[in-house]
Length: 420
Image (cartoon, rainbow, N blue to C red):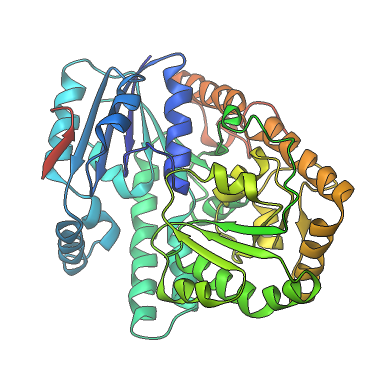
């Protein structure tokens, strides 16, 4: 097929949750189809990164707009009754490129990543249309509203309502909506029961972690993520205040690596604590994972899937995670990580994994096996091919067309790249 993939961020390098997902989808599509990639971003991709993506695509277009202009556009959208999200990504030059592309080669299918960019494809003459929502963004804005004080609370609540309307309209313009896991699929289906839905898991490239059997002997605990993202910042604060002192008391030479871009002031402050390193942005997390004895993810909230945990699974790192994090990961029993809630329980899980080689190797082996079964590129490619085939079929009643978790097995104003 000729497939148009539309993303709200250039997908390479895959350093963030959204780019991990879109990069996996791009590689899966390129294995069998001709792909045109259109992205928007606030910075142009590096030439070497653009070259990697071009090697997979028939054509690539990245519309680069400074962030201040995107924010100004978003604010204007708010005044016009739309969401900030829609205005932020609503670029006229980008839409013009898509219209031109759709007229010249003609596309058999479009895969739109997230409701934020969906208005750009609404007028394109493409019959097979898949909307990859990933997470339910309106739910995330609602969570932010519940956890902050006015006036930010009022803005987040407003954005949640308007993004929900954006999701509804985007879903109506596509034949199928894909979510990152069954929890997100059910969440979206409750809000929009008439919309056909399915599950498309985020994947990681297992070949990037060939040394997954190696277990670090150093007492290093690590967290990975965007360290300006509010749930990650809260997780650092909770772990640092409630868990880390208990770990250091039991293992005095333990070290804690906080790895991720743009750390907030609250995160940077932990660099002053004994045994703690805050790295800021790193071009490659694999060297830090290789140093890691225990990976931790103390994030709370039923928000999608923690892609950083998928990376830890692929690397075979034993991990301690919260129940909310565990609920977003498909796995067999016993789980491929230690699940803990209270600070004492969390600290005990970390300390045992630091001290007990046999237990750490068992959990690490389960982690890698889970990544191979549920989060491999082959599994995702099979799922995408199944969904593309499904939307080719003649229309049938919505209630019979797609079923929950219908993914194929395995079960449980500058142009940065290209010219329009």
